[in-house]
Image (tube, one colour):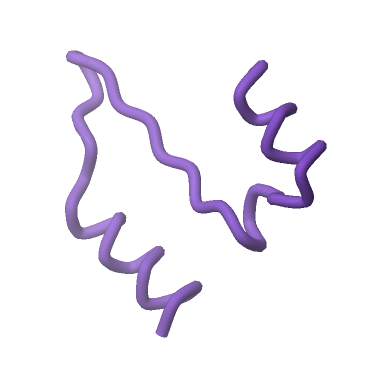
Length: 43
């Protein structure tokens, strides 16, 4: 959370200039979802 707060203080906001993702051993990163997010926000 500290990192996100630092981004926001510098004008970088999640969902606008910053795409967030997370993963764990029980919930690995889904490459299909990542691609969909990239297409939605960057293309």
